[in-house]
Image 1: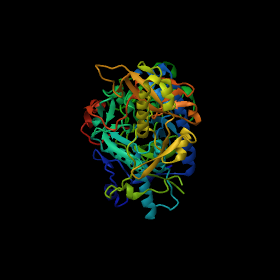
Image 2: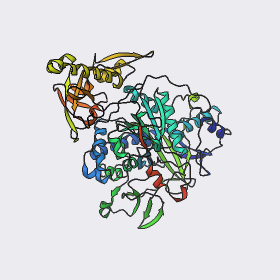
Image 3: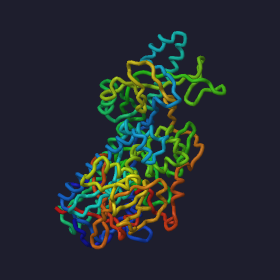
Image 4: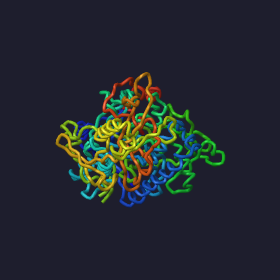
Length: 388
Length: 215
């Protein structure tokens, strides 16, 4: 695993316009960064990332199996009681899931360590599945990279296949896609999802989360009063649970992507549960609930809110001293504690691997860099290759 | 090769036009369901055939006609639809599916294996949502199907809800069982989702137009 400086494609900004990649620069700062790339060998990809990703996913599913029917755990996961039955049902019915991204700390040598699981609303999908693929394709075509270069990234192919699979019993049904207003990044991600679903032959329609309606007869409706029966939402379950229309979901007969049971995996309480059920697993970091901290003997740890996004409200404590604290609006629902395992540094940047799954299959990686030790949504995205 | 073998760049290009995919008329069928312990339940009767219904309800044979027709219509509209007979049969069993056609396309869907009849009391002289008025009170009916494989021996609704064993001709069902599935309805209010985002937008980045609510 190496970070290799390179020359940008001269026309990449124009290509970005052509393909509708609008958020390559955010808040005036570079997000897509092709002035360098990461290079892995095949063994690192297959043994250190691909296999552990699928194994971690299987362990996570075992956590779901345990939590969905345990009231005490559901309470620890801060899931409102009125949704328990529906979540349990969604799991028992094996409602299909589309995708997840697990974040790993990996330096090319030691076992990758699970930071967290973005199982409900993972982003950076477009950059991964399409844009970095195009980058490699262009670089091979122009002769800058060897013909034998590859990438761990079958995300788009698998995503389209998965859409096809899920839609087998939904021929002719419209899949609504939803995200919030005023975020180019989310809109771009959802647009990409739509593009993939369309290629799987699914009829798609978009609606903003804020525009979703409560229809007569207790249905969800889109902006044209069409009843929503099948929906991909880039909007967290835990937000929906708290909001006015939350209880309506129990009556509205909608198949969701991601399914209800994913709310258990996108929850930071997953981390201490994993450690309880699979202690000392090489890809896990010790993690504890608040009440177990006294016995935990952790001197260097990261404190994370049970619900947190994009690195908000996280503090890093070393020997009782707070090294770093990120601000944000989360934390009222409680915290979990995870052993501090710093991200590896490559040429001064802290590097985080996002490892993607389509359903249960590892499907590729994304590499993000940050100047800070906590990766936030201002981090930069760098492409990668597998050396041939 | 560890990457996608091929990506259709024409489809991905936003400045070029994307060919639209022709698909059938809308069908409905979420997989979310009722549960036996939900408070608002009733006993519904299941009949395999119209004749069976009439034999058991000699005095109200007409109500069977209405229920049967109603279920048959609902079945065409709401049964899951499949492109391949194989996919359909793997869920509903050999000979459990039929081919249907409309506006030049054809598809496979499960054959109605019976219909479920429910009753409700009138409220303010009218029937509850999803029920129709008959001489014998408010009735509602929905198609039921029988499954194969792990679903073998059970009654299932169009949305996948399990209504018990086919050995039984009654099912305890929740209020959602007879809920109609319109494709459009009047919207009473909007804005019931999205408030968390407004509340969680905080100082330094509240004005940004790019931040993600994903992660």
